[in-house]
Length: 317
Ligand code: A2P
Image (tube, rainbow, N blue to C red):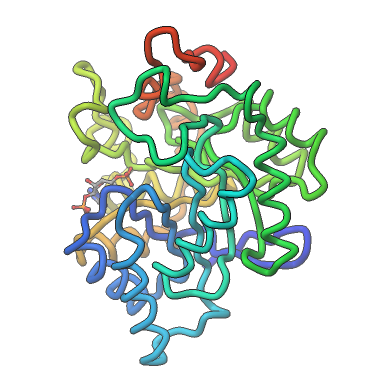
């Protein structure tokens, strides 16, 4: 399995299991199966509502000796309602308790969006706080102290634009080591990727298969289905693999971490096997031409009437 090496020598498997939308009742088996098959990187978040169940699967896998803690890479994310410095440590402590772990390998600021503590959907402008009121840099300082306390080995962000990364880099003692973003052939992040590489920031590709199991409220009506793209089907046929495997291998060949979600044992296995596929330079060039700047997770859930967030100031584009 290819690894990404951080500045301090920590190594993270480039391929991992996504758990967004993995329902309690399904995710326990999915994580146990994945680890048994050889997955060593699990991507979690408090807001996914399933960390306690993932924690049971991790604890049992560790106890039974299938894997050691040192050989696992566990990522989780600070939810938007815990950006106040006093809440950041509470956020990771709750995640650690649920995951039954002493430390995380990577902790990410989930969105550059702030919600008042304890508030949730449906959002109104009263429930949101602007980044002028509670700046990213303030939250980041509290995240830096988590590293110093040994609660996480690495810290990073998610859903950050180049502009937000630049501003964070200017203000950080510990620079962000990761930016987890939506990334697939319809949204190739062709400007963000070289910027990140130049600044020693890795990218993790979320929704690498197009996340077609998103809740209806998060879906557009005219959505193209990534896994049914005719060009990807053709490349998959040529290599006798599936379109999902082409998507996973494409991400890895571009040097980005990738975390396809599955709760289906056969697909969990199939996705892991994609690390051994090889795409040719020609395949990569053909896929490069599929880019259409299409976000499946477009951020419009943060945009409310007269609220502080717009799609323009969220993505800085
Ligand atoms: P399932 O969990 O039933 O396997 P993403 O990682 O982009 O969020 O996509 C997740 C979606 O893709 C889920 O609906 C998941 O379903 C499905 N999926 C995962 N692996 C595969 C695969 N190898 N082939 C087809 N669909 C897959």
